[in-house]
Image 1 (cartoon, rainbow, N blue to C red):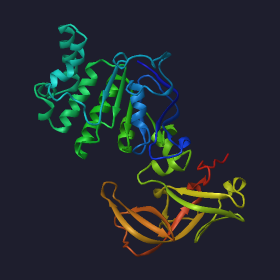
Image 2 (image 1 turned 30 degrees about the horizontal axis):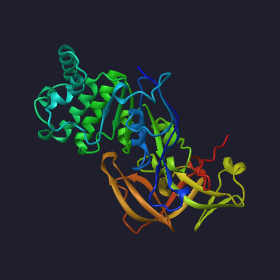
Image 3 (image 1 turned 60 degrees about the horizontal axis):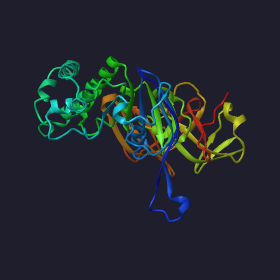
Image 4 (image 1 turned 120 degrees about the vertical axis):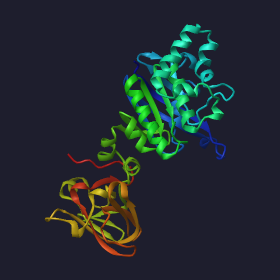
Length: 377
Protein backbone atom coordinates (compact mmCIF):
# COMPACT_ATOMS: atom_id res chain seq x y z
CA UNK A 1 0.00 0.00 0.00
CA UNK A 2 1.08 3.55 -0.73
CA UNK A 3 0.62 6.95 0.87
CA UNK A 4 0.39 9.77 -1.67
CA UNK A 5 1.73 13.12 -0.58
CA UNK A 6 1.39 16.24 -2.72
CA UNK A 7 3.70 19.05 -1.68
CA UNK A 8 3.16 22.69 -2.74
CA UNK A 9 2.00 21.73 -6.20
CA UNK A 10 1.33 24.52 -8.72
CA UNK A 11 0.63 24.54 -12.44
CA UNK A 12 0.07 27.62 -14.56
CA UNK A 13 -1.19 28.23 -18.06
CA UNK A 14 -1.23 31.22 -20.38
CA UNK A 15 -4.57 32.97 -20.82
CA UNK A 16 -4.79 34.30 -24.39
CA UNK A 17 -7.86 36.40 -23.58
CA UNK A 18 -5.83 38.92 -21.57
CA UNK A 19 -3.62 41.60 -23.07
CA UNK A 20 -1.31 42.63 -20.24
CA UNK A 21 1.69 40.32 -19.82
CA UNK A 22 1.28 40.38 -16.05
CA UNK A 23 -2.23 38.96 -16.41
CA UNK A 24 -1.53 36.24 -18.95
CA UNK A 25 -0.62 33.61 -16.35
CA UNK A 26 -3.45 31.72 -14.67
CA UNK A 27 -3.25 28.95 -12.08
CA UNK A 28 -4.73 25.57 -12.91
CA UNK A 29 -3.36 24.34 -9.55
CA UNK A 30 -2.26 26.80 -6.90
CA UNK A 31 0.01 25.65 -4.04
CA UNK A 32 -1.79 22.42 -3.22
CA UNK A 33 -0.80 20.38 -0.17
CA UNK A 34 -2.60 17.06 0.19
CA UNK A 35 -1.92 13.68 1.80
CA UNK A 36 -3.92 10.51 1.17
CA UNK A 37 -2.97 7.74 3.65
CA UNK A 38 -2.36 4.27 2.29
CA UNK A 39 -5.51 2.37 1.49
CA UNK A 40 -7.82 5.39 1.71
CA UNK A 41 -9.91 7.12 -0.94
CA UNK A 42 -9.89 10.89 -1.34
CA UNK A 43 -12.56 12.52 -3.49
CA UNK A 44 -11.61 15.74 -5.26
CA UNK A 45 -14.91 17.63 -5.27
CA UNK A 46 -15.59 20.94 -6.95
CA UNK A 47 -17.20 22.76 -9.87
CA UNK A 48 -16.07 22.32 -13.47
CA UNK A 49 -12.74 23.98 -14.20
CA UNK A 50 -11.52 24.06 -10.60
CA UNK A 51 -8.40 21.94 -11.30
CA UNK A 52 -9.55 18.48 -10.18
CA UNK A 53 -8.62 16.62 -13.36
CA UNK A 54 -5.39 18.58 -13.78
CA UNK A 55 -4.31 17.50 -10.31
CA UNK A 56 -5.13 13.90 -11.21
CA UNK A 57 -3.08 14.14 -14.40
CA UNK A 58 -0.08 15.43 -12.46
CA UNK A 59 -0.24 12.43 -10.13
CA UNK A 60 -0.55 10.16 -13.18
CA UNK A 61 2.44 11.78 -14.89
CA UNK A 62 0.36 12.96 -17.86
CA UNK A 63 0.93 16.61 -16.92
CA UNK A 64 4.65 17.31 -16.56
CA UNK A 65 5.02 21.10 -16.46
CA UNK A 66 4.49 22.05 -12.82
CA UNK A 67 6.28 23.05 -9.64
CA UNK A 68 6.22 21.18 -6.36
CA UNK A 69 6.43 17.44 -5.84
CA UNK A 70 4.41 14.24 -5.69
CA UNK A 71 5.55 11.48 -3.34
CA UNK A 72 4.72 7.77 -3.05
CA UNK A 73 5.55 7.26 0.61
CA UNK A 74 8.99 8.95 0.77
CA UNK A 75 9.77 8.50 -2.94
CA UNK A 76 9.61 11.60 -5.15
CA UNK A 77 8.01 10.39 -8.40
CA UNK A 78 8.38 13.63 -10.40
CA UNK A 79 10.91 12.05 -12.75
CA UNK A 80 9.36 8.59 -12.92
CA UNK A 81 7.73 7.76 -16.26
CA UNK A 82 3.95 7.26 -16.12
CA UNK A 83 4.21 3.61 -17.16
CA UNK A 84 6.41 2.94 -14.12
CA UNK A 85 4.15 4.62 -11.55
CA UNK A 86 1.96 1.51 -11.12
CA UNK A 87 -1.25 3.47 -11.67
CA UNK A 88 -4.66 2.16 -12.63
CA UNK A 89 -6.61 5.01 -14.22
CA UNK A 90 -10.27 5.10 -15.20
CA UNK A 91 -11.35 7.97 -17.47
CA UNK A 92 -14.73 9.65 -17.92
CA UNK A 93 -14.83 8.68 -21.60
CA UNK A 94 -13.48 5.15 -20.84
CA UNK A 95 -10.49 5.59 -23.25
CA UNK A 96 -10.73 2.02 -24.52
CA UNK A 97 -8.93 0.89 -27.66
CA UNK A 98 -11.79 0.66 -30.21
CA UNK A 99 -10.06 -1.82 -32.52
CA UNK A 100 -9.36 -4.32 -29.72
CA UNK A 101 -11.82 -6.65 -28.11
CA UNK A 102 -12.22 -6.49 -24.36
CA UNK A 103 -9.46 -9.04 -23.85
CA UNK A 104 -7.08 -6.99 -25.98
CA UNK A 105 -7.82 -3.90 -23.91
CA UNK A 106 -6.93 -5.78 -20.73
CA UNK A 107 -3.75 -7.38 -22.04
CA UNK A 108 -2.26 -4.65 -24.25
CA UNK A 109 0.04 -3.19 -21.58
CA UNK A 110 1.38 -6.68 -20.79
CA UNK A 111 2.00 -7.47 -24.45
CA UNK A 112 4.02 -4.32 -25.16
CA UNK A 113 6.38 -5.18 -22.29
CA UNK A 114 6.65 -8.81 -23.43
CA UNK A 115 5.12 -10.29 -20.29
CA UNK A 116 4.95 -14.11 -20.23
CA UNK A 117 1.70 -15.66 -21.45
CA UNK A 118 1.24 -17.40 -18.11
CA UNK A 119 1.36 -14.06 -16.25
CA UNK A 120 -1.14 -12.49 -18.66
CA UNK A 121 -3.57 -15.40 -18.36
CA UNK A 122 -3.35 -15.38 -14.57
CA UNK A 123 -3.93 -11.61 -14.30
CA UNK A 124 -6.96 -11.81 -16.62
CA UNK A 125 -8.34 -14.76 -14.66
CA UNK A 126 -8.00 -12.96 -11.33
CA UNK A 127 -9.50 -9.77 -12.73
CA UNK A 128 -12.48 -11.62 -14.21
CA UNK A 129 -13.17 -13.25 -10.85
CA UNK A 130 -13.00 -9.88 -9.10
CA UNK A 131 -15.27 -8.17 -11.62
CA UNK A 132 -17.91 -10.86 -11.22
CA UNK A 133 -20.54 -12.59 -13.29
CA UNK A 134 -20.74 -11.64 -16.96
CA UNK A 135 -17.34 -9.96 -17.19
CA UNK A 136 -15.87 -12.74 -19.33
CA UNK A 137 -18.54 -12.02 -21.96
CA UNK A 138 -17.27 -8.43 -22.27
CA UNK A 139 -13.83 -9.72 -23.21
CA UNK A 140 -15.22 -11.20 -26.43
CA UNK A 141 -16.57 -7.94 -27.88
CA UNK A 142 -15.13 -4.65 -29.09
CA UNK A 143 -16.04 -1.47 -27.16
CA UNK A 144 -18.36 -0.30 -29.94
CA UNK A 145 -20.62 -3.26 -29.21
CA UNK A 146 -20.79 -2.59 -25.47
CA UNK A 147 -23.20 -0.33 -23.60
CA UNK A 148 -21.89 2.63 -21.61
CA UNK A 149 -22.08 0.65 -18.37
CA UNK A 150 -20.29 -2.33 -19.93
CA UNK A 151 -17.55 -0.09 -21.31
CA UNK A 152 -17.08 1.45 -17.87
CA UNK A 153 -16.91 -2.00 -16.30
CA UNK A 154 -14.27 -3.01 -18.83
CA UNK A 155 -12.31 0.19 -18.14
CA UNK A 156 -12.31 -0.57 -14.41
CA UNK A 157 -11.18 -4.13 -15.16
CA UNK A 158 -8.31 -2.77 -17.27
CA UNK A 159 -7.20 -0.65 -14.30
CA UNK A 160 -7.35 -3.61 -11.92
CA UNK A 161 -5.49 -6.04 -14.17
CA UNK A 162 -2.33 -3.92 -13.88
CA UNK A 163 -2.17 -4.65 -10.12
CA UNK A 164 -1.73 -0.93 -9.36
CA UNK A 165 -0.35 0.80 -6.26
CA UNK A 166 -2.69 3.76 -6.88
CA UNK A 167 -6.14 4.13 -8.43
CA UNK A 168 -7.13 7.33 -10.26
CA UNK A 169 -10.79 7.83 -11.22
CA UNK A 170 -11.70 10.84 -13.38
CA UNK A 171 -15.50 11.30 -13.15
CA UNK A 172 -16.00 7.65 -14.15
CA UNK A 173 -19.79 7.67 -13.81
CA UNK A 174 -20.59 10.96 -15.53
CA UNK A 175 -21.84 9.32 -18.75
CA UNK A 176 -24.11 6.76 -17.08
CA UNK A 177 -27.83 7.08 -16.37
CA UNK A 178 -28.99 7.48 -12.76
CA UNK A 179 -29.83 3.81 -12.10
CA UNK A 180 -26.62 2.49 -13.63
CA UNK A 181 -24.60 5.19 -11.90
CA UNK A 182 -25.92 4.07 -8.52
CA UNK A 183 -25.17 0.41 -9.27
CA UNK A 184 -21.66 1.10 -10.57
CA UNK A 185 -20.93 3.35 -7.58
CA UNK A 186 -21.61 0.41 -5.26
CA UNK A 187 -19.36 -1.84 -7.37
CA UNK A 188 -16.51 0.67 -7.19
CA UNK A 189 -16.90 1.04 -3.42
CA UNK A 190 -16.82 -2.76 -3.04
CA UNK A 191 -13.66 -3.00 -5.13
CA UNK A 192 -11.90 -0.22 -3.24
CA UNK A 193 -12.80 -1.83 0.09
CA UNK A 194 -11.54 -5.18 -1.18
CA UNK A 195 -8.24 -3.89 -2.57
CA UNK A 196 -7.50 -1.12 -0.04
CA UNK A 197 -5.56 0.74 -2.73
CA UNK A 198 -4.87 4.45 -2.25
CA UNK A 199 -7.29 6.27 -4.54
CA UNK A 200 -8.03 9.71 -5.95
CA UNK A 201 -11.61 10.03 -7.15
CA UNK A 202 -12.52 13.15 -9.16
CA UNK A 203 -16.19 14.14 -9.18
CA UNK A 204 -18.57 17.07 -9.02
CA UNK A 205 -21.32 14.78 -7.69
CA UNK A 206 -21.61 14.97 -3.90
CA UNK A 207 -23.52 11.67 -3.69
CA UNK A 208 -20.55 9.90 -5.30
CA UNK A 209 -18.09 11.58 -2.96
CA UNK A 210 -20.16 10.65 0.10
CA UNK A 211 -20.64 7.03 -0.98
CA UNK A 212 -17.07 6.30 -2.08
CA UNK A 213 -14.57 8.52 -0.26
CA UNK A 214 -13.02 8.41 3.20
CA UNK A 215 -12.17 12.10 2.93
CA UNK A 216 -13.21 14.89 0.56
CA UNK A 217 -11.03 17.74 -0.69
CA UNK A 218 -13.17 20.67 -1.86
CA UNK A 219 -11.47 22.60 -4.68
CA UNK A 220 -12.02 26.05 -6.15
CA UNK A 221 -9.92 27.82 -8.78
CA UNK A 222 -6.94 25.52 -8.33
CA UNK A 223 -6.90 25.66 -4.54
CA UNK A 224 -8.06 23.21 -1.91
CA UNK A 225 -10.51 25.10 0.27
CA UNK A 226 -11.02 22.41 2.92
CA UNK A 227 -10.38 18.71 3.53
CA UNK A 228 -12.44 16.44 5.74
CA UNK A 229 -15.29 14.00 5.98
CA UNK A 230 -18.59 15.02 4.42
CA UNK A 231 -20.09 15.45 7.90
CA UNK A 232 -17.32 17.82 8.96
CA UNK A 233 -17.44 19.83 5.71
CA UNK A 234 -21.17 20.21 6.09
CA UNK A 235 -21.26 21.04 9.78
CA UNK A 236 -17.98 22.93 10.15
CA UNK A 237 -17.29 24.79 6.86
CA UNK A 238 -14.16 26.93 6.90
CA UNK A 239 -15.51 29.53 4.50
CA UNK A 240 -18.42 30.76 2.40
CA UNK A 241 -17.53 28.67 -0.63
CA UNK A 242 -17.56 25.36 1.24
CA UNK A 243 -20.74 26.37 3.09
CA UNK A 244 -22.53 27.18 -0.14
CA UNK A 245 -21.18 24.25 -2.15
CA UNK A 246 -21.48 21.28 0.19
CA UNK A 247 -24.93 19.96 1.05
CA UNK A 248 -28.30 19.05 -0.51
CA UNK A 249 -29.79 21.59 -0.48
CA UNK A 250 -26.93 24.05 0.06
CA UNK A 251 -26.69 26.29 3.09
CA UNK A 252 -28.84 29.43 3.05
CA UNK A 253 -26.56 32.46 2.88
CA UNK A 254 -27.86 35.95 3.69
CA UNK A 255 -25.41 38.42 2.16
CA UNK A 256 -24.79 42.14 2.55
CA UNK A 257 -25.13 42.34 6.34
CA UNK A 258 -23.69 45.14 8.50
CA UNK A 259 -23.40 45.13 12.29
CA UNK A 260 -25.05 48.12 13.97
CA UNK A 261 -25.54 48.44 17.75
CA UNK A 262 -25.78 44.72 18.43
CA UNK A 263 -28.06 44.04 15.46
CA UNK A 264 -27.34 42.73 12.00
CA UNK A 265 -28.94 44.75 9.20
CA UNK A 266 -29.36 42.91 5.88
CA UNK A 267 -31.35 45.15 3.54
CA UNK A 268 -34.96 44.92 4.81
CA UNK A 269 -34.02 42.28 7.37
CA UNK A 270 -32.92 43.08 10.92
CA UNK A 271 -31.59 40.18 13.01
CA UNK A 272 -30.40 40.14 16.63
CA UNK A 273 -26.81 38.97 17.08
CA UNK A 274 -26.63 35.88 19.31
CA UNK A 275 -24.99 36.53 22.68
CA UNK A 276 -22.11 34.12 21.96
CA UNK A 277 -21.08 36.12 18.88
CA UNK A 278 -21.29 39.63 20.34
CA UNK A 279 -17.62 39.73 21.50
CA UNK A 280 -16.52 38.96 17.92
CA UNK A 281 -18.80 41.30 15.95
CA UNK A 282 -18.50 45.08 16.17
CA UNK A 283 -20.22 48.01 14.50
CA UNK A 284 -19.36 48.27 10.82
CA UNK A 285 -18.41 44.63 10.36
CA UNK A 286 -19.60 43.23 7.01
CA UNK A 287 -21.19 39.89 7.70
CA UNK A 288 -22.85 37.02 5.81
CA UNK A 289 -25.14 34.78 7.83
CA UNK A 290 -25.66 31.11 7.02
CA UNK A 291 -28.05 28.41 8.18
CA UNK A 292 -28.87 24.95 6.87
CA UNK A 293 -32.40 24.74 5.42
CA UNK A 294 -33.34 21.78 7.60
CA UNK A 295 -32.41 23.75 10.73
CA UNK A 296 -35.04 26.39 9.94
CA UNK A 297 -38.76 25.88 10.46
CA UNK A 298 -42.07 27.64 10.02
CA UNK A 299 -43.12 29.59 13.11
CA UNK A 300 -46.18 27.42 13.68
CA UNK A 301 -43.86 24.43 14.10
CA UNK A 302 -41.75 26.05 16.85
CA UNK A 303 -42.14 24.63 20.35
CA UNK A 304 -41.05 26.45 23.50
CA UNK A 305 -39.35 29.86 23.41
CA UNK A 306 -35.97 29.29 21.74
CA UNK A 307 -33.61 32.14 20.88
CA UNK A 308 -33.64 33.21 17.23
CA UNK A 309 -34.99 35.42 14.46
CA UNK A 310 -38.22 35.47 12.47
CA UNK A 311 -38.34 36.35 8.78
CA UNK A 312 -41.55 37.25 6.98
CA UNK A 313 -41.19 35.40 3.69
CA UNK A 314 -42.88 34.99 0.33
CA UNK A 315 -43.26 31.46 -1.06
CA UNK A 316 -41.60 31.69 -4.47
CA UNK A 317 -41.45 28.02 -5.49
CA UNK A 318 -42.31 24.61 -4.05
CA UNK A 319 -40.20 21.54 -4.79
CA UNK A 320 -41.41 18.10 -3.62
CA UNK A 321 -38.83 15.58 -2.44
CA UNK A 322 -40.72 12.28 -2.38
CA UNK A 323 -37.67 10.18 -1.47
CA UNK A 324 -37.36 12.01 1.87
CA UNK A 325 -41.10 12.65 2.28
CA UNK A 326 -40.60 16.41 2.44
CA UNK A 327 -40.96 19.50 0.33
CA UNK A 328 -38.56 22.37 -0.19
CA UNK A 329 -40.10 25.80 0.11
CA UNK A 330 -38.12 28.38 -1.87
CA UNK A 331 -38.68 31.69 -0.06
CA UNK A 332 -37.83 35.35 -0.63
CA UNK A 333 -37.47 38.43 1.54
CA UNK A 334 -36.52 41.46 -0.55
CA UNK A 335 -33.60 40.36 -2.71
CA UNK A 336 -32.66 37.47 -0.41
CA UNK A 337 -33.61 33.95 -1.52
CA UNK A 338 -33.48 30.93 0.77
CA UNK A 339 -34.99 27.50 1.43
CA UNK A 340 -36.73 25.69 4.24
CA UNK A 341 -37.95 22.12 4.49
CA UNK A 342 -41.31 20.91 5.73
CA UNK A 343 -43.47 17.75 5.49
CA UNK A 344 -45.00 16.88 2.13
CA UNK A 345 -48.52 17.39 3.43
CA UNK A 346 -47.86 20.96 4.63
CA UNK A 347 -50.52 23.05 2.80
CA UNK A 348 -48.72 25.92 1.07
CA UNK A 349 -48.89 27.43 -2.39
CA UNK A 350 -46.83 29.90 -4.40
CA UNK A 351 -47.52 33.46 -3.30
CA UNK A 352 -48.30 32.59 0.33
CA UNK A 353 -46.82 34.65 3.14
CA UNK A 354 -45.12 32.62 5.89
CA UNK A 355 -42.99 33.38 8.94
CA UNK A 356 -39.71 31.47 9.09
CA UNK A 357 -37.86 30.88 12.35
CA UNK A 358 -34.01 30.86 12.35
CA UNK A 359 -32.71 29.32 15.61
CA UNK A 360 -29.72 31.29 16.91
CA UNK A 361 -27.83 28.11 17.86
CA UNK A 362 -27.73 26.98 14.21
CA UNK A 363 -26.52 30.24 12.66
CA UNK A 364 -23.10 30.58 11.03
CA UNK A 365 -21.39 33.96 10.69
CA UNK A 366 -18.87 34.70 7.94
CA UNK A 367 -16.65 37.72 7.31
CA UNK A 368 -18.00 38.99 3.98
CA UNK A 369 -14.61 40.38 2.93
CA UNK A 370 -12.34 37.42 3.75
CA UNK A 371 -15.15 34.83 3.38
CA UNK A 372 -13.79 33.05 6.48
CA UNK A 373 -16.14 31.66 9.11
CA UNK A 374 -16.11 33.51 12.41
CA UNK A 375 -15.41 30.95 15.10
CA UNK A 376 -16.35 31.37 18.73
CA UNK A 377 -14.48 29.80 21.64
